[in-house]
Each structure stands twice: as structure tokens, then as C-alpha cells.
Image (tube, rainbow, N blue to C red; front, side, top):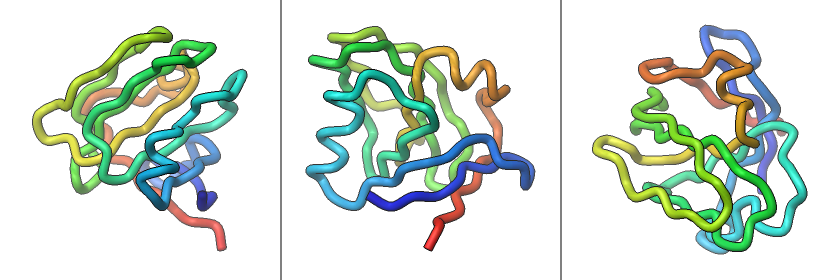
Length: 113
């Protein structure tokens, strides 16, 4: 996985991990006890929390990283694709609200090299 920053209006929202492969997308946050920042699942349109130990916030993002929909997903649930979503941002439950991320926000991703 690659590392970077999630930004909104030029300000850093959180540290970010970014998936590079189907295997990384499929694994997601599975097996972790929590998540300090966020996980960007490129090319993902749906997400599941089967076997996870904690609830997550899921932001469905358009191709240009506009937040299309935000849902909270408890363990052992599935969130089906949303119209216009081309990738997904996962965070620990409550994080998106704390960070002020909401529908129609324009996000940006900066990779750390």
C-alpha cells in the first residue's frame, strides 16, 4: 500500500493509505483493531465489513473525488454501490463527522513518496 494525505480545500484532513491491488482492496481494514487515518479503495464501488472488529464510516467518492454519499457500517454488513461512486474512503466510525467531511465535499489525495 502507498501512503499519503487526504485534503479538503488544501487542508490536511488525515493520513491516508491507498490500495494498489485487488488483494489490498479486498483485505481493506480486516484484521485491524482500529484505524487512525483513512483507507482509500481505488476502483471500489461497494464495501463489506464481514469479520471486522469495529464499525467504519464509508464515503463513496466520484471519479474526481467528490463525496457522493456517507454511511456508517457496523461489522458484518455490506454497503452496495452508489450511483456515481468510483472509489471508497474508509475510516473508523465517527471520524468523518469529527473531520467535517460531508456529501458534496471536494477531496484531494496527495501521495507521499
